Image 1 (cartoon, rainbow, N blue to C red):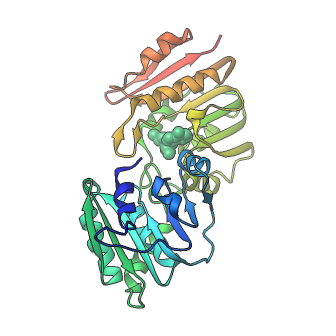
Image 2 (image 1 turned 180 degrees about the vertical axis):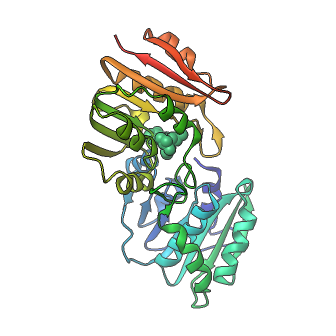
Image 3 (image 1 turned 135 degrees about the vertical axis):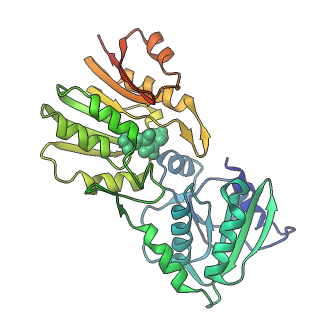
Length: 337
Ligand SMILES: C[S@@+](CC[C@H](N)C(=O)[O-])C[C@H]1O[C@@H](n2cnc3c(N)ncnc32)[C@H](O)[C@@H]1O
């Protein structure tokens, strides 16, 4: 559970410093389940991360993907990582809080909570806050005095933005939203042009690698993009529209496995959960990929050189090798028998 979530829920505790009454209905942006939400008559979650979205639903709560024009008496916000994303989520909260309603945000101090509290105050006027668990929760009420020009400035981050030197777009908060990831460029530069048949890109982001693979390998018949972040999937759809081969977009958590198998899998696997390094995530991607190769299927994986992925290949029994490397990256290749 994110540490800021406990702090967020303290705002609704009757003996707390900032008591806000539990509303009849609330909207939760970046929804993550918490035991205290059980006492709420109704709370609806919006969550672009598929793994967290599934966990929210498993906990028994309602989820929506499209926020529409609905307004809510309380909007909770548990923002993501980047500045643009956080400000875009403040704007989403502004757009969906009812007149007289309250926006409540919580963030870890290490994510710049105090700075973001000040920014929200610029847009809303009055903000009150509490600190607990090395996090900060702050709330603002929509009393008619919001500074709309500040929100308008932040609203830009809600729409996908052009990525320099490409004809592609990415949205704030998605992986490498401002530039093509150099690791993916390394993979594309060293990929054999012979890939064929059915191919998957695991952790496909906004689609750079998928697009490159389709352009480089004419014998590919179909490509599945698999990505946990709904916003990245939406950008990938916009970015890959022009290909003549079958491309399918899956909003899916790779760690849960894949429903089908492939002639080739390419990937630049994640190795972070939130801000923290998580090597096991990359290793789990590898296991899932290796289980999902057809006979003679091939895996191409790019990683930072220091990431200890070779042991996973070694214990897999597959034929494998380092196919290319430079001072930063390595391209690992494995083949199913
Ligand atoms: C290193 S990035 C590579 C992105 C993309 N292939 C590119 O070249 O720009 C890893 C991607 O994996 C996604 N990801 C993280 N955890 C995931 C999961 N459990 N299932 C599917 N995708 C995941 C991230 O959102 C991110 O887009």
